[in-house]
Amino acid sequence: MKTMRLLAPKWKWIGVALTVPGLVLGFFSVFYEFEFPWLNFQLRDEKETDFFRKAEENFTNEIALTLTVVGLLILAYTREEVEDERVRLIRLEAFQWSVLISFLLVLAGNWLLYSFDFYVFMVFNLFTPLVIFVLRFHYVLYREARQTSKDTSL
Image 1 (tube, one colour):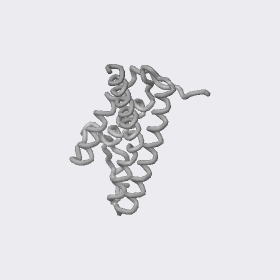
Image 2 (cartoon, one colour; image 1 turned 90 degrees about the vertical axis):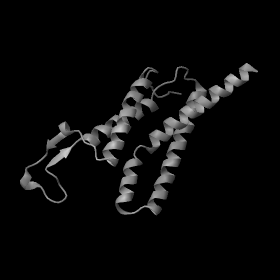
Image 3 (spheres, rainbow, N blue to C red; image 1 turned 180 degrees about the vertical axis):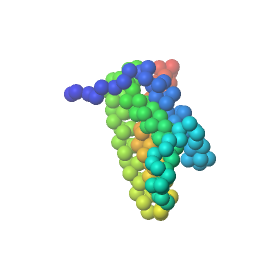
Image 4 (cartoon, rainbow, N blue to C red; image 1 turned 180 degrees about the horizontal axis):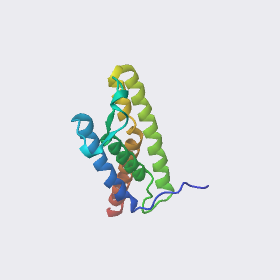
């Protein structure tokens, strides 16, 4: 069976180095309206501006989103030091869990949130599958490594 190519293990640190600042920047950007002033760009003439379209846009949110998504993708698609069939099975199960939980959250949000709150929820839900995958995958690997070390010490 042909398997998907994964990034080398050293890429994991690059993924962490992109994800953490992206999440922090996104948090401050969304909840505290933090913006880098040097990321302001004039998109159109002031004459074309109306209620829904600003003439000037700040791209801090876009930088935060890009850093977070690229970092999480790198974390999700980085090979482990020992990438055997058990690790591949854990990877598959973590992916299945992430899709299931993500869609259950979408269904819950569909019934519990309305208007702009639902929109904000869906924006945050962009990250849900990747975050759940990375957390579940590494948690199961950690739990199995811990169990293996307990078994060998007996």
